Image (tube, rainbow, N blue to C red; front, side, top):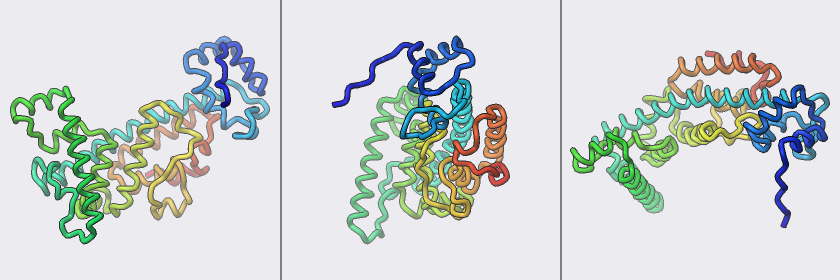
Amino acid sequence: MIELKKAITIEEQIALLKSRGMHFGNEALAKKLLSQIGYYRLSGYNLNFYKNPGVEDLFQKGVTFEEVIQSYLFDKELKGIFFQLFQTIEVRVRSYLILEISIEYGADGWKNINLFVDENEQSLQKKEKATEDFERFQQKMSSELARSRETFIIHHHRKYNSQFPVWVVAEIMSFGNISKLYKNMRTQNKKAIAKNYFLGSHYTFIQSWLEKIVNIRNICCHHNRLINRELACGKKTPAIKKYDAKGIFAYLLFIRDHFDIADDYAEFINDLEKIFKKYPSVTPEVLDLPANWLEILKV
């Protein structure tokens, strides 16, 4: 078994980076930043500056510590503006599901097995799976409701004898659980939501991409690195195929074309342009964006 690497001091970390070809303009500041951010966290931002990433940890000629910090700060601001965009998306999707469920199945429609199980389904296997998904959903939400200390949950325990309408239950659902709920709903309900609220999109695109958007939203929430990262994408839309888009570029094309959030999206693109200007050493390639990304993505 390979032994774990030994911990080294801040001074030793700087010496190691120097031995690999990194230059420092201000070592005192570098020591402070390494102590505040952490050598390991920053190491992910070194990748774009290596001569042969994945082969050897030697830096390209002239690379500075300050450039790596620029990438880190760019990434930090990028996650901030993404999180704002995802807040809008999460609230909208939650509201769309509440409307569909409550109108079609009633205030407590989230407890109706027909939300998941289509009685006209011919496949016994699909019916059994839908039933299992419904039971898991019920168990999950019952557990969440029992342990929640939210004022509005306590109010419904006391006043309504622990009966909860879908608009209350949805407020304690994570974005991940909202995505799973959409995925497991009957096809006819998914189609209606996609048609009415996602610019007429086919439900399979929405189902595929909601799950991926949850993943990237979680990256932002947990302060993990977003740039220079391989990101799994959902089902390819015509626009994604047209530009052979991947990574963040594919996400932004999908959000532009399938979410009715033009103002929020435009604000995000403007903010992205600003942070690229603020950190000129960071190039669009770190987000899999083409050189003319702004021309393509602006609405």
